Image (cartoon, rainbow, N blue to C red; front, side, top):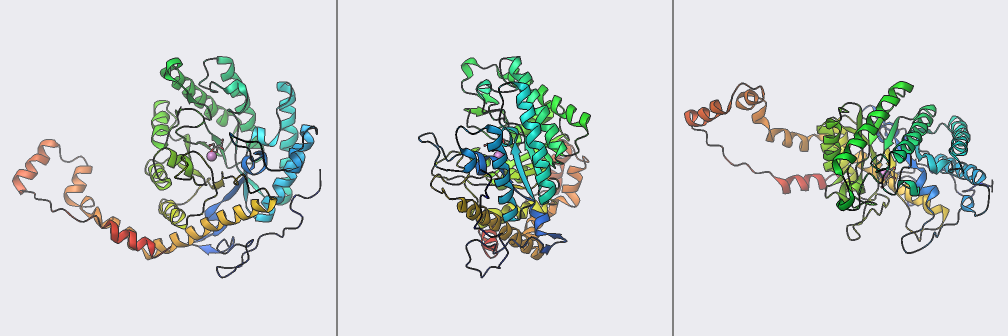
Length: 439
Ligand code: XUL
Ligand code: CO
């Protein structure tokens, strides 16, 4: 079980845009400096554990299609977990990525009792710590799986049974402490089943109160243990439930305000969750930036014809360019990063497919970064946007925002000055053509 997972594959190197080598970076040149930071520092790329190492290639109609050495049946679960950890670090190192992400249950199996589960987790976290030390790969974030076990069928914090709430608290406490021990830059909470399947059995006011209390407890504990990373909530509108309370950035924003958690929790925005909510990825980023909630990103893509959370690897230079343009204009990533919450297609059964998928995804981001930097440096798009609001930087606009004019004063201004504002073109097509120049 302990032989190498990717023995015949060399580490991925940067070969430049002209390269036709399939397993090489054409755009991602980790040490290249742009706007005073390296590409690696701008993108803070992470590989996720769950899709790449835990998911067996199953879907609702069929069993797993992947045969990985650590998916062997009948072997002791901890030995399988150790084999999986070694394979995961092999991939991280071959790709040359700076970070990974994991759920508690991805890395260590649940045992027969709470004590055995805790000892499994402690054992695997110690091994992860050693692998991180040896390889220099860091932890972008950790999280707890509060959706897989049958006890969470009716939700974790929003469960009608307070004993399930206690279990969720127990699990998050350990996952948060493990993340802290591994020097994680963030801790993520995805409300996997925090929602409802039918309103017929759901007391929404009560469930939202429970979720608010849960978040307050997590924030309190974070401060108690001195975890300096950022807490993040990952919005998603549906799936597996019919409706999830963390529907989108705006819904999470309202929730954070209601429970006094603004400033304590930020957002982990995911492409396919944004599109399921009827938004674009860029919309969710802009909403988060506009409300000081921008944290980190789960990068993937959906399929517009399928309409569920397909979590494919990203491949659109246009989407990554626009997202990175918004992010750079907003000040860039702080503790966040780009986490590949993306999985292979079920027919991509070879280990090598994991490399093709990540190489393409990383290059899509790097290409977006290069384009976005050129867009920012040229400044044409931003200047046109700025110009559109010129009226708000002086005179009337400035006075309105400074609270110097009430409704009656504004009304008098229209009468007395005879204001007749002229319609102005929004220039959408011109701007679309301008963006296409950079792609
Ligand atoms: C599910 C999803 C999760 C979170 C972590 O759609 O995105 O994998 O990122 O729990
Ligand atoms: Co995600």
